[in-house]
Length: 251
Image (cartoon, rainbow, N blue to C red; front, side, top):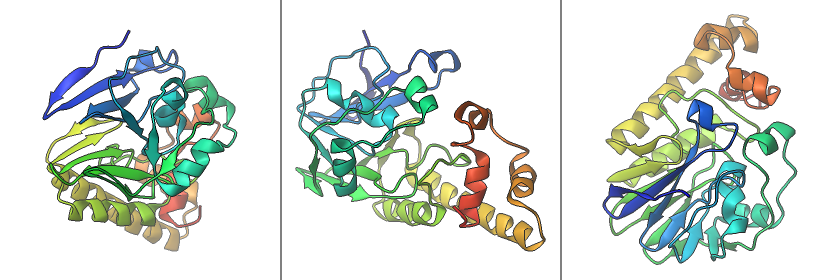
């Protein structure tokens, strides 16, 4: 049984892993705050108890949305995500093995619920939203941030959209920011700006190398020192090479 951990300011978290991710301590944070739960975690994790009265889903990737079918909670999300939660697409084998599937669940598209705004922030995925509490300046960022220099991409990743989304959230001037994989992010505005700088600089470097005649795989090796082990695990579906293609706008 998982135990919710207090983070202060009324926020609690569970860090959920699966049988294939616990040994590398790779998992996903879900949160409880003001009677709401933010994201549901994967299906292939131990069951947990939620005290929330409703659930926000930031996007429909299986590590965030798979556990929603276990919870008898009203679900709020963005318009695109609501459709995908009701009609989940088939997943590649490695994703089903690592995290589990996403089963159809009823979900309501919403722009605002109480003091919370569900702000569209595509980039990591087309349907991504962040959850922003205008009363306190708290943002639950899903996979918007991850880390300053995150360099893996999967289908649906879009660098230009991500940069635009990051700048949109920076304009909100969040006082506190909770990431689904990095946890609580210190000095969130500074961190988000650093990520924008990294993406813009790396995109410029990739385009320069392309003009010099380098192939995408050579650009990847020059910028990142080779491929990630995740590319092997995923059969190339999640990789640095895909990130380079996105930098070059060739996805």
